[in-house]
Length: 276
Length: 267
Image (cartoon, rainbow over all chains, first blue to last red):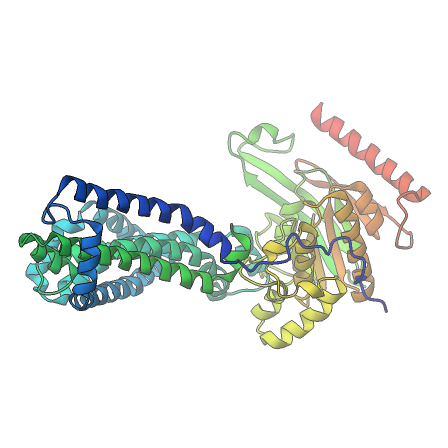
């Protein structure tokens, strides 16, 4: 009995592409232009501040901000740690509850009809407006900031997960049913993996906004955190410290964004092959 | 002897929307579009039977009924003489789209059916490996589908279909999306495979020559509503030469019959 395929000369066997491993080269090529532009802006800023003799309590030069970043690094680090913890807790709570609610909305028409419009309508209420209330209800401590971050993160996670769960190709659902799959198997083998890219794009939006949520919470009323530090430094016209705190916050948001992208890269290897 | 697969008086109609009712044909009653009209056919044990017809003749609807995805309005489908009812997963079914899961590597796409049946992953992979090798895919076991060509993806889908351990395989225009050269190669794969594994096959196509080259018997369908117009046996040994006199003559006969049918439909 002979094998169906002849291994050596198969006209169909050439794949479109052999290698799938990305290299660091393109990353540098992408990072180069914005880095140069940023350097140019900072240079112009430094020159302008010195040339026009602008005082540091109006606009500090980048070099002065850099100095503060170094000299006050212990203070900045300890306040950043507080803000970061608020973000992580808020994000974690919103993530678990968001995925849970998304599954409920997906699984039950009744829940969907009752809850989904409210979830969407809740977005018309500016979270900043609730911040003072949260302080009243949950106090000046960490809890009110965690709640702020969670509230702001909740929506993109729920909406993206629901969209993702619905995104599965109906033909593939039929295929699984023909293969004898149970609804649970369809969920685990098809809907959940198909939803993951959607969940990740929700998380990417969420991590950036979670930083905003935590900082707003700290502005309104707090005893610790980068937002608290900024308000106090601002009041005392320590504008260089304000800029240093803003720098740390930006780096934090960028770091979180990169971390999520890195996790996505690891968890969804098939997207690397299919994409770009 | 009971045929392996029997389709008896199968009838199906869909509620017609205003836009589609225009092409409803003589048999469509007000508001309904007749898709299948008393279609009967049988497929013997290890027989390769092709259902040949123009697009819109209800071939895919028939496949969906046999696969248990939609219920018929009349008639029944018998497997080994017993009605299949609304139960799914009794026949293997492959479509024009390969429907591979992009997050599963080739080998794990191939074992999807076995995995759903509860076979352990490693055992299923062993079984798949052998079949992938026969299809010239052994170098691509660990590739993601996105890296494969259309023909290769369709071969993976074929392996997945064959691995379902079902006696009856329904192939709904499986090579419809492929170019002519790849199609010819895929036909070769399919034929050698059928000889080796001896499955019962119901093959759907609108390609007359493909039907003649592959089948033991051909049912020719007409459109709107779909019904069986002719049954043609092709008693030739395989592989068949497209230039063989009988192949050419049969092709001419079927073409003429279909042309008359089309002329009637459009007059």
